[in-house]
Image (tube, rainbow, N blue to C red; front, side, top):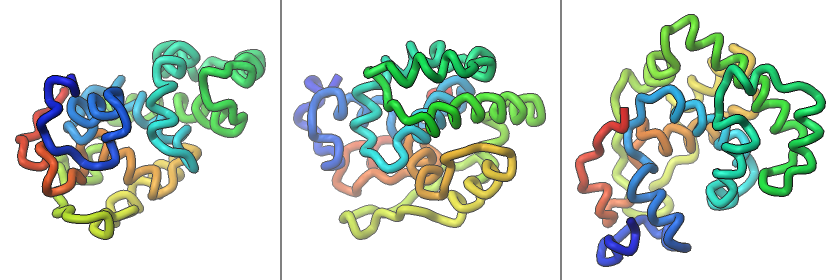
Amino acid sequence: MAKQNSDKKRCEWCLKDELYMDYHDNEWGIPSHEDQHLFEHLILETFQSGLSWYTILVKRENFKSAFYDFDAHKMSKMGENDIERLMRDEGIIRNRAKIKAAINNASCYIGICEEFGSFDSYIWQFTDGKTLDFKIDEWSDVQKTIPQSDAMAKDLKKRGFKFVGSTTCMAYMEAVGMVNHHFSYCWKSHHKLSSSG
């Protein structure tokens, strides 16, 4: 946990509180190859669009409850009654377009898993199965989009996904370890990233 690592230097964006530091230390940027985790992050990133990630992180458990622990098959069957229920749920982001997009994206996700055998096989092709390392010394070095996030966004949209622009895809790639965007002074940038899958 973050308290045990209080002596370590971290990317400054995560220093807000223990929740954020723990997420930075134990999840963000670690290569993930587990479909359920990859899908959860994709849904959460689409809700982040236009908001801060911290806003989503503090509501993460509420999102899990609202969307059946991110069970794509259950989500894909959600209808108007479910949408109205979620629009009254103060524990999540009550944006009708994003809620409908999450349900839609669950169906698209299932289609990809059926076509490629796993979402992991599909999504990691955009970086050739490798983590892309970037040297980040200051905020100006942080890239909002890269050709790979452009390609991912274009292909996801072609497959029917919503709220998956290149900036959202870039944030997703950082979160699931497809891109290493830890600052050079951060202990995680020198730490060998291990796969969670």
